[in-house]
Length: 189
Image (cartoon, rainbow, N blue to C red; front, side, top):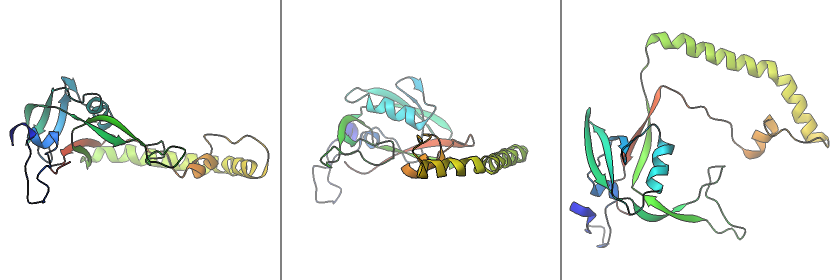
């Protein structure tokens, strides 16, 4: 529907509106290549640009079936959850969930495995062996560090394993053989 007008898709809610992405004609499996004239290199970057563009019409180029398609889209101002460093929605002191008003487009990221040539197997295997060897060689020192942190008055190492356990998260490394594929939510908001 042109302009993202109102329509009832049998939901019983006649005031449901298409997401800005769906209203602009974006389709599932479109890959966003530029936003507001800037080349997109990753999901986090694209998200920041969308969030800062509420109410402003911007150009967006996607790759669809191997060909570029350019259109315009206007992100809407929407209350979105504030996410903490632990990946959970932030709360205030009273336990109330926190939100902020930012631009919303209605697309999401998909991670896709990209096939690599056989020549990339040995370097990746070498990298894995190097990382395992690093853990094995550093483990005794780490165990001592955990024991000191748990049973002594010494300051806890913020980069040590006990810090990771306390937060319940392990560091994640971006893999170069994956690419970000953005798909619009074709539902309503």
